[in-house]
Structures are given as structure tokens and as C-alpha cells.
Length: 106
Image 1 (cartoon, rainbow, N blue to C red):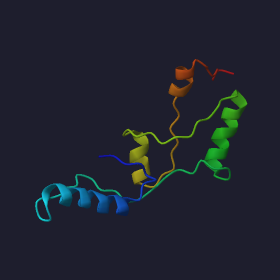
Image 2 (image 1 turned 60 degrees about the vertical axis):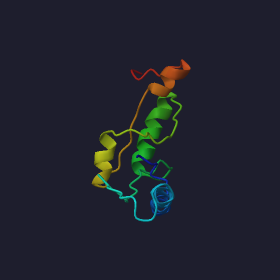
Image 3 (image 1 turned 90 degrees about the horizontal axis):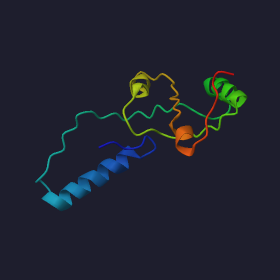
């Protein structure tokens, strides 16, 4: 099960145990974690973060509309964040979906 980094993991853990107790009884279940990572190493995408400021100013120069979101799938950034490295994923999928396009060759 994958949850957003914004989720309160302690509250989620309590809720998960409650669901299991309701379904299987007090001692009728066991949770086995394959990976459990509590750090919330999100890269700031707010003005003042030098990496974001540099990236967004270049995108502004292209006239790109930036949509900030959290991608639910495993990607390279997941591994970078495990070692507490800031990272930003750039995808063109949103512009492809709405029919607009950005000329990155300017």
C-alpha cells in the first residue's frame, strides 16, 4: 500500500490496526512490513528554495505552465529522497493531455 507523503503515518498506522482488529479480532492478524519509511523528505517547491527558483525561472522563460503534484509511482526520486537529496521530476504528460505543447528548443 502506498500513501502520500503528506499523510500522517502514525494516524494511518492506528487506522490500519483498527481495520485489522475489526476484521480479524484482537489477535487474529499480523502486519508484515516489507518497507517502512517514516521520513518525509519532500523537495520544497516554494519561492526561496534556490533549486526551485532556478528551475521555475527557466520554465517561466519558456512560458511553461507548471503544475505541482506528487506522483504516486516509484521513480528515481524515491531513491534520491531516501538519502535526503532534493529532487524535482519533470514530465511533459500534462501538456500532452491538454493538447498544449512547450518548445524546449528556444
